[in-house]
Length: 327
Image 1 (cartoon, rainbow, N blue to C red):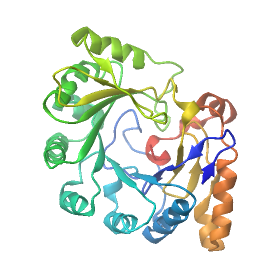
Image 2: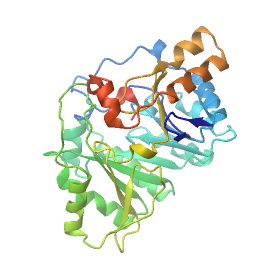
Image 3: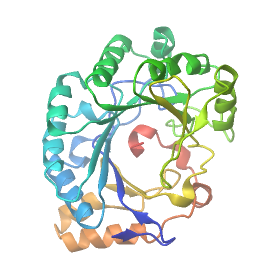
Image 4: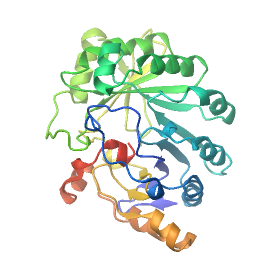
């Protein structure tokens, strides 16, 4: 079992498989993109699988595959097949922009991988294309509806961006009216590859809730696990639910059970912290499972208590792009 220096049990791994993305969302990176790492610096599928198995042996029972966009990797399904065979791994999920997932939906379903988070920051096509700087709306919308109607457990992640998409907050909620889906509204974070900087936001989770309440005054709160980053709600008559994630306000830090590993093997113990160490180098230099475990324990044993504490310790962390951190 992994327990950090604040006595928090760590059982959830967010594993990035690539730093590349086929969209260019304006809150994530500059229009020209960022300097993606060379392929030989990325963990191979075999390394990702081995690392996952080691972490599962240490008590990780939930793995979420992230990126960049995970399906940019042509060999991703090899990893997914291997993960489904790991005893002790109870929850395998994926966060995707849903542009490339279409050809893999049937196999994901057959493997039993049904927890899918879809990043969708606009329900209006023109707004979507303005934010993503790409013409992929129809593909994303069609794949989203297919995932929902084929029985996947879908959560739609919508980042509230001032002067960009807040007019879509209520319209995107209509998905939860008609489908058994969870629409979750996230606060914007400053991990955008240096494209802009800010110290506060207007659309925090309280503002989002007030906005929703203006149209749906009878929504009520649902019970959530202690480790949940999302505060969840139900609107009477809606098939699905909605939630808010205070990713900038960081109200959930006290119960954080997450560990992040980037596509290059960096161990990241908090979104607002820099990498603790690098497991790729350890794997390639020694190949020792014990050395890998030692490095994981070292990182977990030196976590900041909150994102605010990490932010104070690690200067210039906001120069990173979310696509290189792993979400």
